[in-house]
Image (cartoon, rainbow, N blue to C red; front, side, top):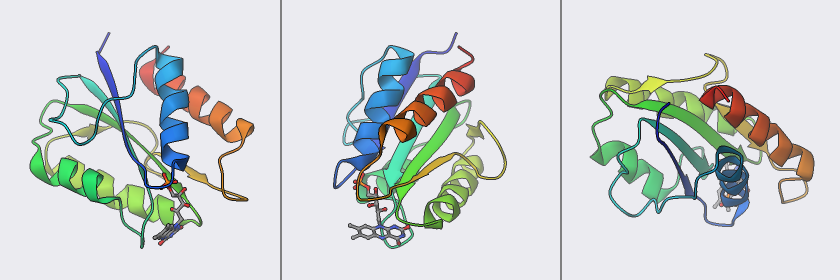
Length: 137
Ligand SMILES: Cc1cc2nc3c(=O)[nH]c(=O)nc-3n(C[C@H](O)[C@H](O)[C@H](O)COP(=O)(O)O)c2cc1C
């Protein structure tokens, strides 16, 4: 089985909550997105959606690394469907950099549209289920 890393760019904490649920489900701890990319075969990369784009650290992580031979699963939180558009852009860039982006082609990952400001228990359960399926558990 692949070693797994979960990284999130989260200004207000929503994406971090989703990342925590994913990491817990997969039995790993959340990595530090500001540090060098961990040497894991399967990367779960998540970001909040800010002006239709990923956060600063996620943009840098994608720009600064080579993803050849890496499997990547993408997740986002957003206020609207912009999250899905953002995931599509992230997937396209990552594929150009050699990544194999797992999951469905549309959307290109899990987007949780945050209602009433925070992810709800059912959102976190959805994230757990999605992560299990992606990781083949
Ligand atoms: C500065 C800012 C810009 C945002 N821009 C968008 C946007 O363009 N589209 C969208 O759907 N949501 C947008 N949102 C909503 C966030 O994506 C949403 O609240 C997300 O859960 C934030 O993630 P975080 O709590 O992990 O930082 C924005 C929020 C902030 C604070």
